Image (cartoon, rainbow, N blue to C red; front, side):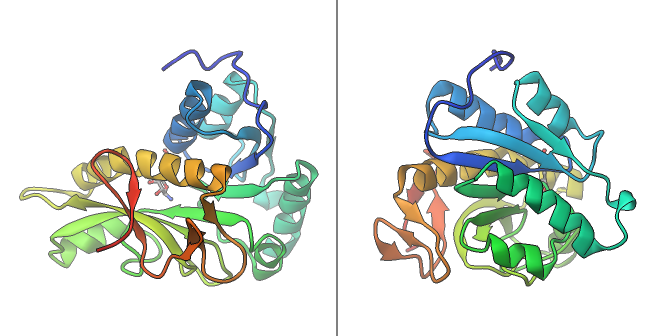
Length: 232
Ligand code: GRF
């Protein structure tokens, strides 16, 4: 990169909204891919529960519409979610991506967008839903770790898994080194999934997601060439 400032992110008809709470390395990967023409999508908004997070700063720098709401200004989780998802609805997204969005979304809001919302989770789901996945994998002596993209359902980190990337756990790894190795591969995983979804090769809906019109019974795997392939 990085010619992000001033670039046009709203040319393609497929409308992408991103939710983020963190530094925004996944958002950056998506912005760069749209800019290169690798993802045929418009980024129509970046939404956050953390007004000071890096992801929002990056979105602003890119000239993308941003909305940040503070949960502490709302009396309940549902009230916060309702406001945030009302904002999201105004941009009419075809797909909502939770890219490091660290807040649990209540069932009412999930249900409204259940056919079009995906999450990126740093483990080989169904292993290690929830937090601290790296430390937990290391404590178990796991030989490999990775990241998953799944459709969001009301249960945490539990929706159908679209695709995964695997990384080895190496001798001497700590949570930090394993996180770095995993995140370096998580970015191309997300980009490959967004390419597939924006092009219509991958489809969500409420049942099993499909890829090339075949149901995804086992998560697609990201190859070393950053392509998605069927699980063996
Ligand atoms: C990623 O590792 C993702 O798997 C997890 O939160 C992290 C977000 O990183 N859900 P970033 O904000 O995209 O840099």
